[in-house]
Length: 127
Length: 106
Image (cartoon, rainbow over all chains, first blue to last red; front, side, top):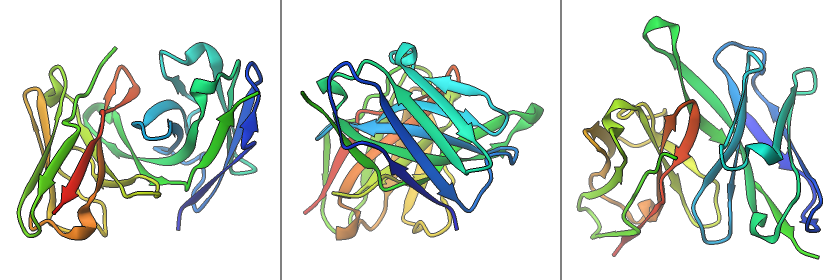
């Protein structure tokens, strides 16, 4: 059974750096075709994808937030860490991590989908 | 940047069919996922690769994708289907979510 749990500070001050940890079980991030992603949702608003890291260490970032984000993985600890710099009140949101599974298409191309999500962690940015 | 547009709200009577659309440029050339998010809960995958249902998702959920529009169809809608629904696709190896649709069952 795959589970993911987000952890980190509930309150950060403007300009500070946010560090969130996704601790997972039931899979290994060294297995081919697997990934872990981060998604956030401001109060009353839509989902916004932030970043993801794949089994082969490939990293992808939201173009609009790329300069502020870093995603890393620790396979031995079954953790993925997301850092976001220069936090602002507009970054107040629930932050989710999700497991990505995949289907191998023609030409060995992987199609990924977010099939298991954590419960999320709420982060408020305020002085 | 790539955008996916959904109607803000859709209403349906219990037992009827609900259709939620997701529009994007040449969306039919991409694969689409659909996520259900009940109030206070995390999103849950209900459709992936346009038409496939994960295990445990009822058969009343189906998907299609052609041209510029993907559609999530819920047949025989039940009260428990009342939720927000989001489409998602990949563009240049980055994930894009739709604007979200609130489905009301009344």
